Amino acid sequence: MYHTYGGCADRSADSSLQHTDDTAVNTVSEAAVTEETEKVSREDIVESGMLGDDVFYTLTNDGTLDIHGSGDMYDYKYEENKFYEDGRVKRVIIEDGITGIGEYAFFCCHGIESVSIPGSVTMIGEEAFYFCDGLTEIVIPEGVTDIGYAAFKLCKSLKKAELPETLLGIRISAFEKCLELDEIHIPENISIIERNAFLDTKWLENRRAEDPLVVVNGILLDGRACTGDIIISDNISVIGEDAFDGCENITSVVIQDSIDTIPFSVFLDCVNPEEVTIPDSVDLIDCSAFRGCTSLKSITIPAGVRTIDEAAFENCTALESVTLNEGLEKIDRWAFLGCTSLKTITIPKSVTGLGDLALGAYKGDDDEYYRVDGFRMYCFKDTIAEEYAKYYGFEYELIDG
Image (cartoon, rainbow, N blue to C red; front, side, top):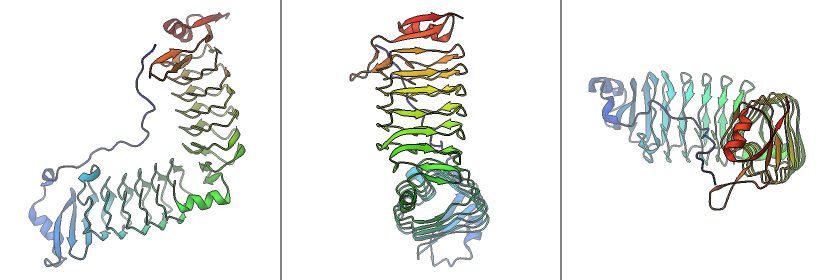
């Protein structure tokens, strides 16, 4: 039995510089707040205060939230934002001078129906408008370069999103579960569209109907609707993480040599492919890339691959043959964990890193780890592979040279 720990790292961005304590921002006098709110009739104001070091707000009795001043809004944590589930807020007007919309700034503000964002804003933080399910349209102005993680996730009524030509990145789940979103133009400048950015939207459904391989700006975003034998052609430069996650209808995959990374969870739980062709251009097979591909029988790792990341082929239970080439440097923990049909493997001399339970083991129903019966390693003397075999008690044979 063996014991280990951990799992694939959470790929979502960590929050930083978050503001959670309103009492900590009393660095501006009441006179400053008063001066900023003079333009609004005092009779109409129901609340006023600060949302950043130099960012002020007024909320009027008709539900208009006016945000003014200069610089970035504060980052918050989940329900600790100023307007969490505050049904009073109907319209948000962010005035020129504000440069960043903070993380979780309007998290779960269900009453918001419209938002006006000025050209001075360059960044929309993670989950900034998460679950603002009354919002029907958003215009993101020129100047914004990044839309953060889950920024508009679960905006279930959002039908239209206008994106600027300045936009460079759309982060994980940015528009996920915007169920009504069907009108969106993605500018040609965008080079980063992270996983599930448009999952469960009408836009993605419509694109799948046109072609089950959904490709935008050379990025393969989604292939879950694909069937049969798949060829990822050389007009695709990036395969998105999770792109084929759970696709049960593909039978083989050929990847052309325009790709340098087989990304995180890209073929996770694709249970039917028996063959996958990886090109020489690939240098990284990322975490869980082929995890749970239970029909995969053989795989050749080309000479260009330097790293097989953790759990890359975990629980590929039919995998009988793995060919590793000289040039491979690291086989991370659990890379071939649960590959119970894999009885022999030759480890190149170039491998200098072998993670915990990378080879020759499986996890039992009791959550303990066991050796695969009959597993045997072929390796070079005085290498990490020989150390690994000795440590775990595997049979091994030394290769001359």
